[in-house]
Image 1: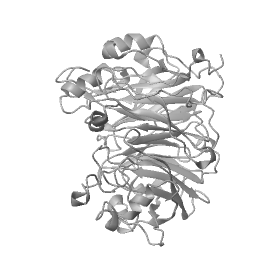
Image 2 (image 1 turned 180 degrees about the vertical axis):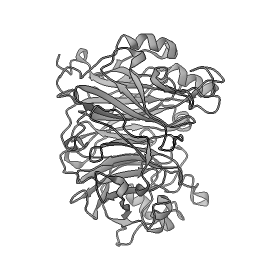
Image 3 (image 1 turned 60 degrees about the vertical axis):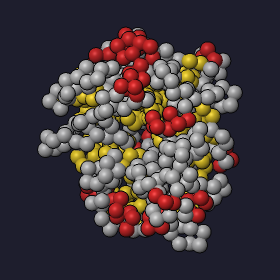
Image 4 (image 1 turned 90 degrees about the horizontal axis):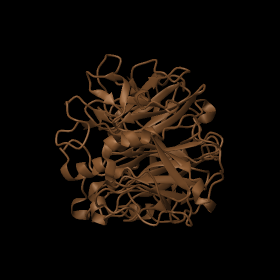
Length: 522
């Protein structure tokens, strides 16, 4: 296996010197698709949760950093403390490895966009006392000039919640960002960009899209907005060890796709039992061993679905429950399968992230929703990959090709300790619509800063690194560039791959083919 970027023992300060020499601009040279790992080149096992560990990638791949936590923002907001790519300095603490260190802001999901000849990577930030949006200039070779602040205030000049999910809406020419918090804090915010990729508006809450603990967000070809909620449920109590389903999958039909503020209809997904009756929160939040949950997490199962309209968007979670929608165990992110005309939507379910959970669905999985079209009211839902102790905490998701689905873990420190394994990134092969055992293309390490936090955290910063922001795109900012429209070709014809090693040094990486492996053309 190829071990890349041995940065861990340097800590954040050494990293800044090392990666400044490896920054690249523009698009990488076109080379053959390396197939993004298969059983012949995959990483054999996850890294143990012990000390500082290197990232390990499949031998066909390598990575290079494009941004990291200590990079200063070219236009900082010192009043709110949004001064660096991965740190909020409002508490006056040093940037890393100190009992009173600054707040880590956790850059999260990535969106790659091309505007003219410029190549940018946008992120919302999940942690810290004030939310904000950043832009990494992939063409800029000077680290001090590479990252800028896009927005961190609403129209009234007030700070905004921290952000998790992000997508580009080409119909309204806005970045849509999700605040993963219960109503009334959570919901969708938007910031408009001009033809050069610069912000032309403050962050504006999209009231019509509802308020809930939203995370994943994605457009379809009709201009609908699909939202996936991540809200943990209550403990099962006497029904077993684990948590009850408490999160929903939503779809927003806008009246006018180019202007989401004009309103529309918010719906939630309802799954029907084999007898045609809906599986509802009233049932699944009463009995954590409801037979439906076992059936849902069984290979070969297929369930009819329909969309129910919510009577209110003030609290989307409560409205979905009242409408009889079906709750899941933290279905965090979703994407459309390329080449299917937006008729296949795949989403992850994180599960309980607890090795001791004995409830059905404890380890989550990946599900496929099939419909006759993106606006159809009915469909079928099936599991395509089911989690187990070694493969769980599924979070971010992206298609590398039409048949190869990238899924990454966010299992959390507790489960890392229970299984003595850090997070991994997997390739799920969908050939013939039958998922094979996922191949590991990434065994995430633990950098020095994350190791310090795991051992000596001041309480407001996370511990172990996690994987987030897996993103495969050619950067097309037009309607034809909506993810799922065209077949991806990683490393060829401008298609690029990014992921973020959240927590610790908060490094965002670009994945590249490794010509030394013999699996890529020079």
